Image 1 (tube, rainbow over the protein chains, first blue to last red):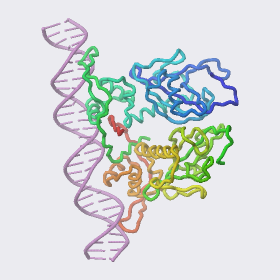
Image 2 (cartoon, rainbow over the protein chains, first blue to last red; image 1 turned 180 degrees about the horizontal axis):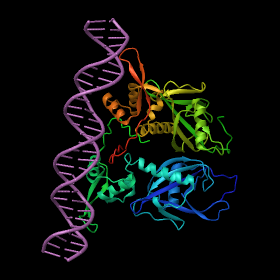
Image 3 (tube, rainbow over the protein chains, first blue to last red; image 1 turned 90 degrees about the horizontal axis):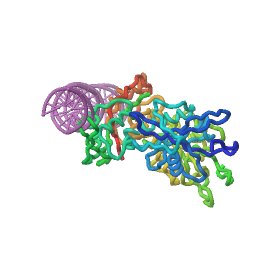
Amino acid sequence: MSREPRGKRQRYSVDVVALTPKDDELAVLLERRPAGGRDRSTRWVIPWTEAKTGEGLPDLSQRAIRNSTGTATIWSTQVGAFTGGPHPGDSELSILYVALVPMGQSTVPDEHFAWFRLSDLPPLAERQGQMLQEAVAEVRDRLDLDPVAFKLLPATFTLSELQQMYEMLLGRRLHKASFRRALAAAALVEPTDEWRSEGRGRPAQLYRFGPRKRRRARRGVRFDLLG
Amino acid sequence: MSREPRGKRQRYSVDVVALTPKDDELAVLLERRPAGGRDRSTRWVIPWTEAKTGEGLPDLSQRAIRNSTGTATIWSTQVGAFTGGPHPGDSELSILYVALVPMGQSTVPDEHFAWFRLSDLPPLAERQGQMLQEAVAEVRDRLDLDPVAFKLLPATFTLSELQQMYEMLLGRRLHKASFRRALAAAALVEPTDEWRSEGRGRPAQLYRFGPRKRRRARRGVRFDLLG
DNA sequence: GACTTTAGTCACATTATGTGACTAATTTGC
DNA sequence: GCAAATTAGTCACATAATGTGACTAAAGTC
């Protein structure tokens, strides 16, 4: 599957950056594939799936996610289209998706796949590295528009776990009182009647995701320009 | 150019939604193409350009923008990849770009092109309409991360013009004092020593875009979820 | 010169956010 | 059993950001 005869090029591929929390950090699912050309070593690459003729992106991306993560019932979104630099599958055009795998569901389909923490990545080809960066940026950028943090948590969770998830995604610490005040104002979670005793310390109440009311999205202009 | 022999399918196309301000509203550049199949009428479509083998997206998108708007020196960004629904050029996959044409530069390359205000669109195919919506949403979503509003203005402008541009993009009125306070805090514009007398009323000072200092992008979590 | 129109600023009320200190409920060590 | 440690959860207050009406300024119109 790694080499195609020249001339019969792939039309395009869908590449999947699957992310999951691991040791208070994001981890990405990579696939071990034999290097192309004269290089006999193996390398880690972002898993990809070839497009079939007539297959639409919704189906194709679901198939690609199933191929790599083993499940298709997880959240994903398109990051964009990429060209340039060598692609492991010889396809000129990659459509990149990022998929979020909840805590504790990060199994691997077989021994060719493994999770790597972002701070402990194996060497990646340039285009691969860039695509990974953009996939992570896509998730971070959506953080306050889209409740993506919840996609990385199990169905019920404590507020401290939720805060840790936001801290992981934002890359900085948050103040507990501020976090909970903002959360309450957004009415995003609802308490369950369960409590979790996590060893030492006071037990924490479990919450589930459940947006109750609409926020009026007023506010003036922001000019939150960074660059 | 409108029909390709069956079997020799296009690999993919780059479609360009070019936007410009017109009558206090956004307008989009559409192209008149003969309808496919047995339909002899013409229809308006989002301009597209076929990919050539070996051409990367940066070059290709510039070429596509030049083909439709006549210039390539304007701001653009990728919106995403689309499949599904008929494409006027028979290509299964479209990579969508949105390009912003400054006020007063909205010429058309020839009589096959025309600008349509968003409130006054001709009938579009379903996929085309959806792509247009996503392109506009992309620009709106970037408004406070990226100074896109300036890409729709000439090099110098009055603060009232800038505010009107934001109001057009946001679809709501802003308070003058708030707007200017936020603008000053972001240090995004600098005054020129020119003034414009626009008929009646006090003349307005002209400004140019010129970010002076970095904003520290602190702030806690936002939870600005709408949906 | 009074009135209209648009530009530009100010002051104050209201709301949002940052932050430390507090109380609560549990385990651990003695 | 009881103090110390640990984590959850809340409060109160200081500071900052935003909403808003009213004001002054400089031009044209009649």
